[in-house]
Amino acid sequence: MKVAFTVNGERVEADVNGRTRLLDLLRDRLFLTGAKEGCGEGECGACTVLIDGRATNSCLVLAPQIDGRDVLTVEGIAPDGGMHPIQRAFVEKGAVQCGFCTPGFIMSTYALLQENPNPTDEDIKTALEGNLCRCTGYAKILEAVHYAAALLRGDVK
Image (tube, rainbow, N blue to C red; front, side, top):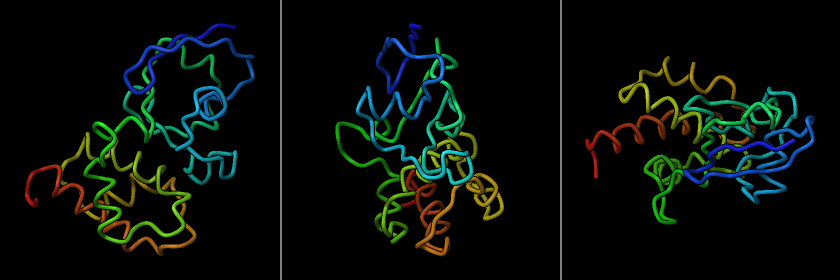
């Protein structure tokens, strides 16, 4: 079955089996390895990407479901190979430990800040509730999201 969609701003066509997951298509065929296989059940958020602007667990989406849609991965948010302000915030605030969950948190944060440039702690916790981290304890992640919001608003340089 052929699917055609946009990933990180580029039009892509692929022949897929009807049971192929988006996560596998991204990682194994398109070599976009930022999204990680964590639980394979939509519980950990390590595979989060944006589909039509909405944070989605790519392990739960079959490739045929993305036909005609827009997919954004962590590889697609940074300008010219640099760091996106959200990535910068996670690094500067120490919200990165082992890094396995980081792309998922970054993509969920990206979706949140697109809709809400000045989130409260509760807004952040709600937006990130589908992302799990075994290393950081979440305090630094919360701090990083606030800092990223400030960077994007231009409140800090």
